[in-house]
Length: 168
Figure 1 (cartoon, rainbow, N blue to C red):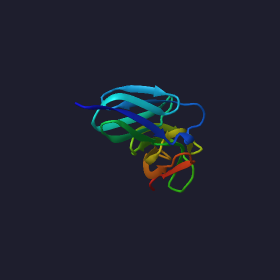
Figure 2 (figure 1 turned 90 degrees about the vertical axis):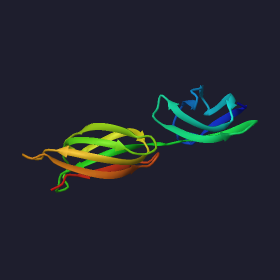
Figure 3 (figure 1 turned 180 degrees about the horizontal axis):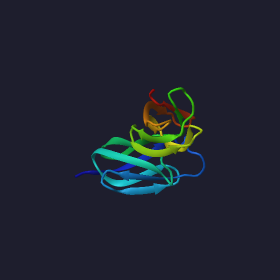
């Protein structure tokens, strides 16, 4: 099998606050770590290559693909992005309520979180992966347990809110 060199670069670096190190994994398990988000893999087989990158010590990650030809090749892996998410829990009348919330991130890198929302009806997650989210709320405002569901979107680098209200 013919082989070539592959240089990969992580994009969206300006959105990462402070110092960050990166790790990149090539489809056959080769792994490389750098501080500047540039990776070099030597003697890579020609053909379609899958790349992944992640911020070490963080949650942000990305993936990409490149067709490796003979000679030097370049690829860019775009990070998914992260942002804070505030869950706003309301009873059927719109008042704040305590309850249990299950949050499902359904973007390129699925994730789940369970939180206990306090009586203020607010719970803030400092950083989650960007993309679509579904929040399911369970609360007992009286004798009966009620449920609610809401859809939302976490946009990278922005304050995000998912308001979920109990069914009447």
